[in-house]
Image 1 (cartoon, rainbow, N blue to C red):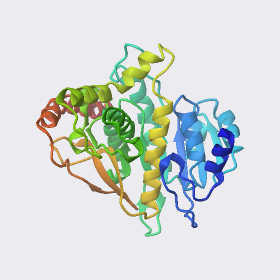
Image 2: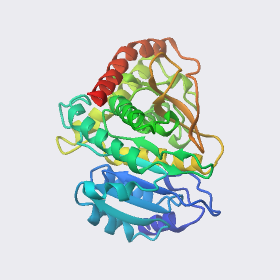
Image 3: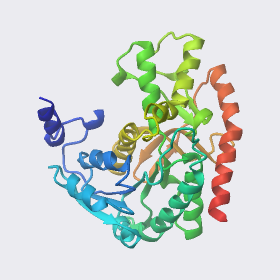
Length: 350
C-alpha cells in the first residue's frame, strides 16, 4: 500500500507532492543545482527535488560521493534528468545554466555546538561556492539581461552566510538582492507543527509567519497572526516560541551526536525551492517567509513574508500587527542578528 502511494505521488500528474498543487500542463524547463548533494541534507533534498515535476534538469554536486547519489536518484521515473558532479573541477558544469541553486553544503551541528561554532568552517565553504556561482551562473534571460540564478542558502549560520554571499556577489558585480534567499522555512514548518499540536487544529490548515533570523532568539514566530485562531495562554505562546527557537537543538540532542536536523530541513528546503520555481514560472500569489535584503527594520537582512515571482523577490511584505510579547522579542533579537550580519560581511571582505 505504501509503495503504491509513493508511486502515485511520483507519477500522478495531479498529485500534491509536499502538500503543494503542481500544475499538470506543460511547464518551462528549469535546472536546479544542489551544492552539497551527498550530505545529510543534500541526499533527501536531491530525492525531493527529483519528485518535483517543475524540475527538468537536476545537477547534484559535492566534493565527493556524488556519482553514487546521482545514479541512485536518476533511476526514479520522474521528469528530471539527473547528473552528478564531484570535486571542484566539475563545479562549473554543475552550475552552468541553473535557474535555482540550493546550498546545503557544510558541516552539521553537533551536541554543544552553537550555529556560530560552525561559522569558520561553513563560512569558507559558502564563500568558495558563491564565487563559483558568480562566475558560472549568470545567464542571459529572455529580456537579454544577465540574471543570476536564484540562490537558496541553507548552510548555517544563515544569519551570516547570506551576508557573505551578498558580499561575494557584489565584488563579482553580479549581486541582485532579489535573487538571494536565506532558507528559514524549517522555522515555519516547526512553528506550524507545534502550533497545530497545541491548538488541536489540522496542521495542513495552519499558517504561522516566522520573522527575524534563523538561530535561537533571532527566530521570532508570530503566533498572534497564526491561523486558524486559537485561544492559547501567554504561557503556552511562550513555550511554543521557545520550542520553535530551540527546534534544531531538540533534534541535535535526540540524535545524540549522530547528526542534526537533516530530513525536516530537506523537506523545508524542497518546499522553498518549489515556491521559487513556481514564482519563476509566473504562478500568482506565491508567498513564503525568507531571510533577504530588507528595509522593513533597520537591519540590512531580515526574514519576513516575501512574494516570489519571475525575478525572485517581487515584494518584501511588512511584519503586520505584533503582540507586546512579539514586539519585545523583536527588540531582543536585533542586536544579535546585527552582530551575525556584521560577522559575515567582515569575513567576506577579509
